[in-house]
Image (tube, rainbow, N blue to C red; front, side):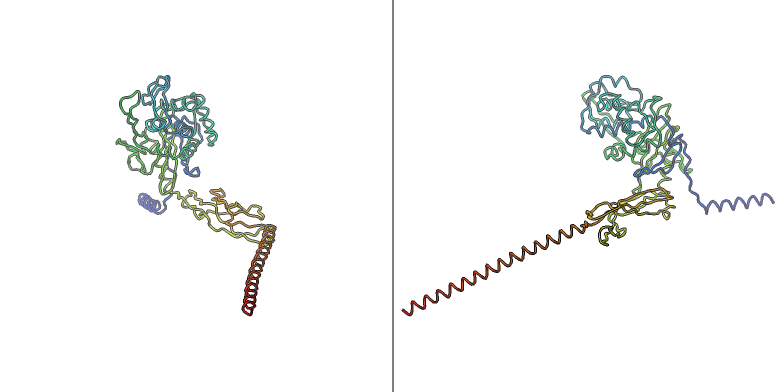
Length: 428
């Protein structure tokens, strides 16, 4: 009897599971991780996202974006005498006095994660490693990565060189705003041609298996063994040191939605498994909702000093936000109008419309006037001016008509006088 009861309970449980699907955040294997909207920076999922961690070669994201902002891809850079002998870990065997372009060094920095390329770039644009590191930390604070401190441009271990998953997501969001950076981190293969020190080209591929994977390695996603390769991946950087473990910053784009995932201190391929699960969560449960369209009419308002005049309010720009699909119906909007008075210029900002979800602001767009509206005084001045113009116009027209009539009168008088003279002459 007990067995039969347990059997029925089991059957009932199976039906309950099948008909009541519950979406839950994936299990994250790495020690720290975060998933954010690549456009707004909204956090969608996290695990110890603010915990200080060693970033390893994820550091090179900052090195790359600083170099791109300070230089040009065509910049010619000469390798200093010290770097080739100072660097440990991954490298592309740069030699003292070797001449390369910034473009070559950036691809070496981001694809095979060359530490020697990082140091050469830093010394060239910073004047020294110390000065470049100072610029890195200043940029981090500017971006909002307040829990980050860099001591070198490559990420080799230093106990005072740290960041967080949340900070690295913000830094990557900033870097992905640069189209050249986007192109570099999405590249699968690159070749450095012969240089003054190398008689053979150097070939390398992207170490990020989400972008490029030729191995037979497998990860488990939703109970199925799959390749680490991810079809929607667009970048960005891998990292490893014994102290940092396996780290990954990954970017992906699908149907207009951009996501950034960061995983830190994983084992083996765990970072790729975490990235797959985070991206699947983001793309399956969230939608890029269009909250407002550019030039959309919102409402009419009266102007306080406009003698009951009204103007229409329209949106200044498009506005989208990444929102959970199940929460779309809960989005609310509030309109805020500034203290405005005439005159109003065309496209002048006169307020804003704010969109909230669960009392949190998810987007704001300015409201503008589609036309210019003059003040009463300006209109009065305009009316006086128009009256003056009309008066002058009438005066000129009267003068022209008078001159024309006078000319006609003179012509007629001249003809009459001529006829009289001819008549007298003939009579004589």
